[in-house]
Length: 270
Image (cartoon, rainbow, N blue to C red; front, top):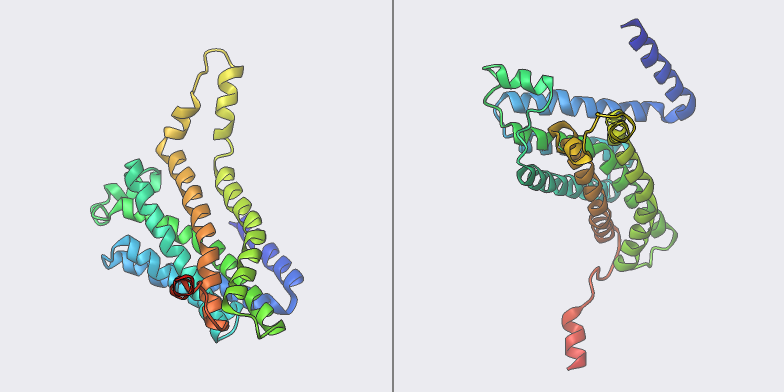
């Protein structure tokens, strides 16, 4: 306990040292994430709200709070909220498809088994609870990406107010592609690091006589398969967040058409 408190105090001191005046805003965003889980997600689940809906509600609550704290009230914050909300809705749809395709029960750890055996919580929809976990797990990084794209479009428009919506969206997509690489690496290594020891098993199979565990068998384990699916769902949702955010922010801040005038083109050719 003392070690944990010491590490937490050291981390807080490091944040204060590096962030300077922005430290309170950063800590408030962190607190907003905790509040969205404790005050929104958990009570909703306890009240019998479907886990997918509870996860989306908690995610949207955090997104709105983070957008207001990271940006400012107005069209920029609306762009962040629209893009990030689209991202977590995409994550929810992908999570449902992945869990259904993999026929995952959602009971894969000692903690979820405790919930399963407890008569009070046994009625929970565990596959949906797994999906809710995937939604919540992607919220933070999706908000970061949406904020980066929206802020870039806002700065470009400030520099040249005459740019059209299509030009602003193109600028946002360009920035999103640049940022996406680092964000994807963060997500992939976070999930891979959770099972660093598992990555050694195929190597031991070839190095130790009689110790044979096929790689396919390793990835067929539900706990490992869930982390792989979480990584795939998260990365795909991140990729989809970029065009959603770029389009939403360009519509809010720009002028002119976002999509080509297909009907006009057909009339001119006719």
